[in-house]
Picture 1 (cartoon, rainbow, N blue to C red):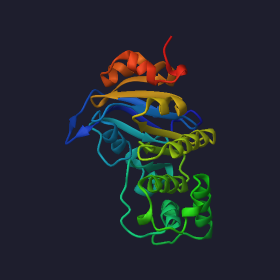
Picture 2 (cartoon, helix red, strand yellow):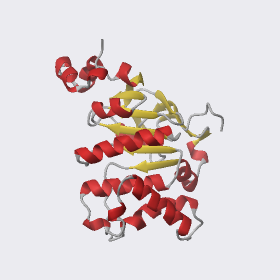
Picture 3 (spheres, rainbow, N blue to C red):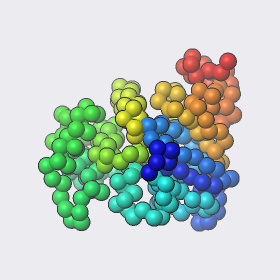
Picture 4 (cartoon, rainbow, N blue to C red):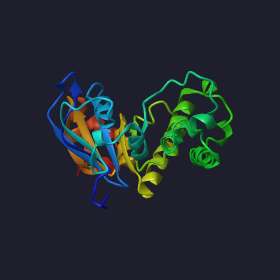
Length: 258
């Protein structure tokens, strides 16, 4: 893969269900070391887009490429080695220990029916330390709060050591302190060359971590570009159907238009 090849690219992509498109085709890409943030109101198609990019839903039109190759050319294990996913919320009904759940992120690097080895558990422990979860390592996930479980899912994704991380509203169930921790982690990952595609309902979070922002409405992209050029009060007021002055008051000073 050349340096110019995106980690993930959608070309003429239309998303939808049962062959019916939600909106017009669009294009987007994520480069190594880039944070691309998706903003949009409830029901705009963000989760459908993520499921399509992950190969869980077929594209209505167009194509998704992963590291320069069509997504369909990658089997499930190969996709997991290239792209890790953190869902909005995922039930963890069994009483696994936190360390065991995080080590599950190593599955894509193991042979069929193989168990994680010493090196895999060391990687899992590193991910727990990065998110400040060492004290929870031997707890069972059924005893954790919702926010703690979300942090464990992020650690599991980090353990995949994929060059691309896809995160669907990763801070949605977290308290203020853990939100800041995750935002800081996202920027550190980008500084290490990992590409990050995430969605959020918080423009402030997008402006804090994103290199580029995509605005989504009606199943299609309405704008895509540098964060502070796209997440302006005027654009966000139109996107969410609220008053421009109220949006401007809610944004950090650097996120307002001049």
